Image (cartoon, rainbow, N blue to C red; front, side, top):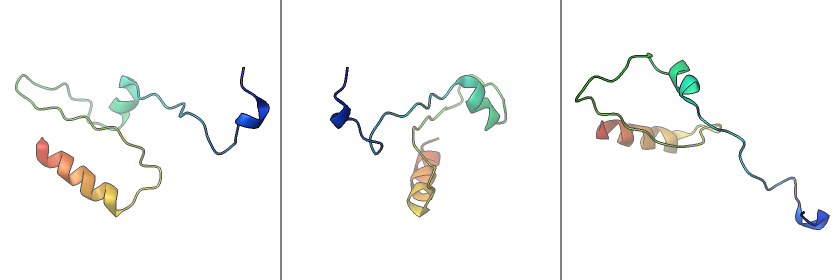
Length: 63
């Protein structure tokens, strides 16, 4: 059990868990073919900014 003084509303753990069904909602729901390259990247894009765009472009270049 945590001491009440050690708990803060400003800290905590994310409750987000990406599932296959959630990912499919944002994809074209096409199964990869043999030889296709699949690139996965994790991120929290709730406050999307130009740095995210640059990051995603670099990830896309890998695939």
